[in-house]
Image (cartoon, rainbow, N blue to C red; front, side):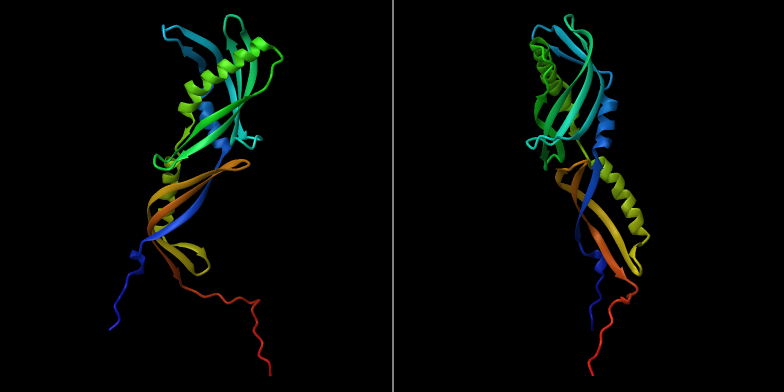
Length: 218
């Protein structure tokens, strides 16, 4: 007697690449940072305020040693440099912590020269303060909430037998996931995700390929 087997109960591992455009991260940072001030607090409690953030943009860094380029537009608020608008370009390198499942900035380089030694020193101080006070805290990318949304959507489709080609259906459920790698590309992050679940490919119809026409030699 043949033993019946429910193949849908088998544990499956699926790796899917998920694309996240830099414009998505840019909009996220703009909401968090535009209008905020860049300031530092000395050991004696004295607060030094350098500038107010007016705008920012994010793209792939042209420097091969770094991953991203963040352009920051600002208005100065110091006594010496008052209400002067300018911008700085920061090249950022990312680090991905697999255990914590977080990507964060671990190194940066300031690009640009104003032609004024004193203002250059001001920009360096402001960039260091900005990086340690804001970016390293706020540029911790957690892609899991967004992936969870897609996971719910995928499971809804799988519950209804997702037809991936004529006569071929995918069904089951994806239960858990873990990000394995984050790759910065020209205009987006490529997030490689390992999903674990119970899935089954169900073939209901075999489609013959009309281009295949075997001939028998007489």
